[in-house]
Image (tube, rainbow, N blue to C red; front, side, top):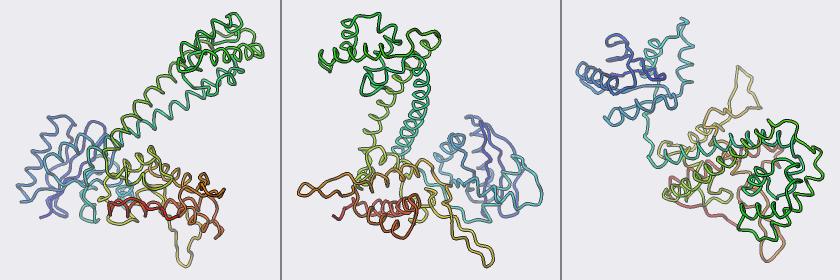
Length: 411
C-alpha cells in the first residue's frame, strides 16, 4: 500500500482526508484545529493510517504562506514526509472535474488523488539561518514600502505648509532636517525665532557638524521662510499631520537601521551569501535577498528549475500549426527574487568604473555587459535583454552555489 493524507489548510484549522492506496479512502474527512490538542489528534490519526496500511503515510498540502507553519513544523519534528504543492497545480486539477463543487472536504480529497496522479517532489526543509534571513529581508522590504508611502504623504502636507523648506538641507529626510522641521514647522515659526535660536537648535540635533554649518543652515532657513508663499498656516491640522509624519519617518528609519544591522550580521555567517556577493554588480542587500529567497540550492537539481522558481521562464503557446513568437515571462515564481535579480543586472551592466591608467569607462560586470550588448545587437528591447541577463545570472548562481566557488570576472 501507498498511504497518503491530504490537508486542506486554512486559517487556524485544516480539513483532513486519508487514502490507504489509490482509490481507497480511509474513514470520513474531518477538521482539526491548529492547537496542541488538534495536532496531537492528527498524529494519532496518522498512526491509525500507518497501522492499517503498514506504512507511514505521506502528507500532501497546498502552500498557504504562514497558515501552514504550525502544521509543517509539528509534523517535520515527528519525521513525516511532507509534499507542499503550488496551489496552481490543485486549481488546474479541480478545473478538470465535471462537477462544480468547492468545499474543504473536496479539496482535501483532491490533494490525495493528486498524489497518485502526479510526480510530486517532497518538501525540503530550509535551514534556520536562511529562514531568519528571509524573514528579515522581507520585513525590511515591507517597512521600506510603508516609509515610501509615508514620505509621499509627508511631502503633500509640506507643500501646503512650507514648500520652500525642501532646499534648506541637502537631504530632506535626514535626521537634522526632520527634527528642525519638527521644531519650526511653518515659515511663521522661523520668522518669529531669532537666528541664534535656530542655530542652537540645529547644532543641538546635529553635533557632528560645525557651528559654522549650523549658522549657514539657519540663514538658509530664514531666507526660505521669507520666500514661502504661505505667511501663516490657516489649517492647524496640517501642522499636526506634519509632526505625526515626521515621527513616523524617524521611527521607520530607526527600524530599518536595526534590520540592516541584523541582516548584515546574519548574512556574513552564511557561506552562500559571500559566494553570491562575489558576482560584480551584486551588493550586500541584494545578495542577502537573493540567497534568502532561493534557500538551499539542493532544492533545485537543474538551473531551469531555479529559473522557473524566479518566474523568468518564458510562457509557451502553441496550437496546431501556430506557434507564438512573442512570449512573456510566466511571473509565477518569487516576485521578491525576480525584483532583486532585475536590480542586480541593472547594476552589473552600468558603466561606472574607470581604469586607473586610462580614461576608458568599463561596466561593473564585463561578462554580463557583453551578453547584454549582444542581445541588444540582435534587436531585443531593453527589458527583454535585461530578462535574458537575469536568466544568465541565475545559471551563474546555480553553478557557483553547486560548486561552492566564487565568481571570477574576466577583464
